[in-house]
Image 1 (tube, rainbow, N blue to C red):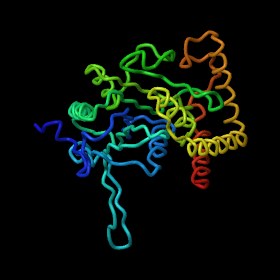
Image 2: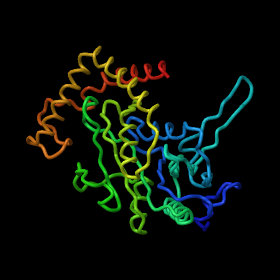
Image 3: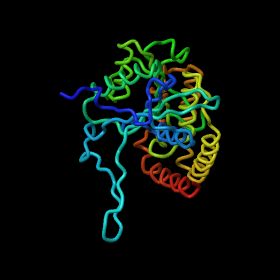
Image 4: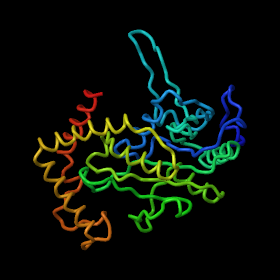
Length: 307
C-alpha cells in the first residue's frame, strides 16, 4: 500500500522549513455548498496577486474521473485544452502581512483516511495548528434577515458563545468533516461553520453567504482578510434578488412567510429551532419549487450579465 505521505509533494522552489506557520483554510469542492458560499469565498481569496502554490496532492490517484468527468475544449477538428483537476496548498497573506494557507480542490473520492494522514503530516511539517472551513447549507430562512450559521469545532472554546441549532443528528460524511474529527483526535484545533443559506437560493450564487463565511473565519483566526470586492459583489447580488422578489408576487409572499417564521423564532415563541415551523402555512421548497426555479434562473442571468 502506498505511503500516505507520498500523496503530496512540495513545489521544487519551496523549502518547507522556511515557511512561516499560520492557520489553514480547507475548502474541498463537490460536497454541500448552498449558495456557493465556499466557492465564492475561495475565488475571492485567490483573486489577489500574492497566492503562491507551495504543495500539491497526487489527485490522479484520489478521484473517480468517470464519476465526474473533467471538461475538454474542442475546436472544430481537434481538442485544444484540458485543465487537470488539482488539489493545491496555497500560501497567502492577509492585509497586515500575516501568512495563512488555503488547501482547495476537488474532494477526493478515494483513500480519505490516507488523505487525512497526509494533511496531518503536512501540518506538522509546517507547524500549522489551526484548520478552519466554511460552506453553505440550505435552511428555511429568508434572505432579508441576518445570516445564521452552525458552528462546530474540536474544542468548544473555538466557537465561543455561538448557540447550537441542531441536537444530535446523523448526517452524510464529507472529507472536511472527517478531517475535523480526526484532527481533534490527534490534538489539533479545527473549527467549521455551516452557513445558513435560504433554501430558495441554494442553487444560485448568494454572496452574503460568502461574506458570513469570511467573517466567521476572521473571528476564528484573527486574520485581517480583504473583503472590499466581496462586499461590492454582495451588494449587486442583493439588489438583483430584491428586484426579482418585487416582480414576483408568489415569491414575495413566500419570503414574507419565512420572515414571520424567523421573527417568531427570535422572540422565543413556540419553537425550539428554525427547523420546526409555526404553522402549516409556512411554504416548503417543494410547494413553491416551480416559482423558485424561474426565480433562480433569472437571478443567475442577472449575475452573469453584471459580471
